[in-house]
Length: 208
Ligand code: B1M
Image (cartoon, rainbow, N blue to C red):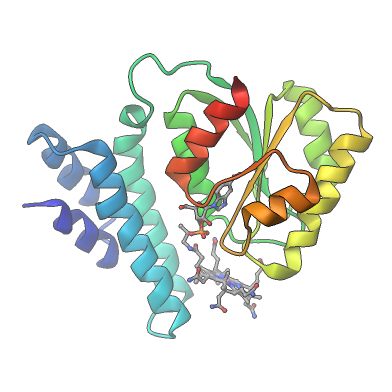
């Protein structure tokens, strides 16, 4: 058995058995980050590619995501490293009009694994809802996700709404496949990360 079995389990939608596979790998001394990157994330990338190419369809994509989620639950407590508690409070969601939440969920899980208190507002979130949640939870970081080029402007609107509300202490991080550092700079967000592990690094940097 090896990490490639974990990878294959995602591709085969083995939601019921993936936890056991990962536990066995961990017991055998496998590296947590390697299991995450080469097992789960690589498999999800392959599934996304197959979806884009018309080889897989929505139900399969969702089954793969559920399988990945089951695997992540096992890894979650080990992702943050020792003593990573109360790293900060984060509000996260996908911006108005965007229903893609697989990446956002993954980022959220890893942030929780990294010791952050997470308030996930879900998908298709209005700028005002983000503003209200940042106030309510006294968040130190706001995380915005967008997968569509057409919903990226909603990120800019949300950043503007946060500034208009006078929430100068909250740091805004953004991500999603079409998003770039240049775009983050353009809209006045405090940071961009391209994937879930680097989102944790960024959140830690922004929390300092
Ligand atoms: Co849609 N979709 N989709 N889709 N979908 C894309 C994004 C697309 C590129 C497919 C394509 O055409 N090749 C395309 C966008 C084109 C564009 O904007 N230029 C597209 C389209 C067009 C659409 C619809 C408009 C299709 C239609 O109805 N005609 C529609 C729009 C719905 C809406 O949002 N209003 C739509 C719908 C859907 C489904 C519902 C079927 C489903 C989403 C299910 C769900 O999420 N619950 C879906 C899917 C699955 C995809 C693809 C295939 C996969 C996305 C994914 O989950 N990737 C995608 C094509 C692709 O990417 N190959 C596509 C895996 C995930 C782990 O990666 O989300 O990138 P990702 O997240 C990464 C990073 O981006 C980053 O970290 C994550 C983990 O490493 N990251 C952050 C993400 N958020 C972050 C936040 C951060 C930091 C990092 O800080 C806060």
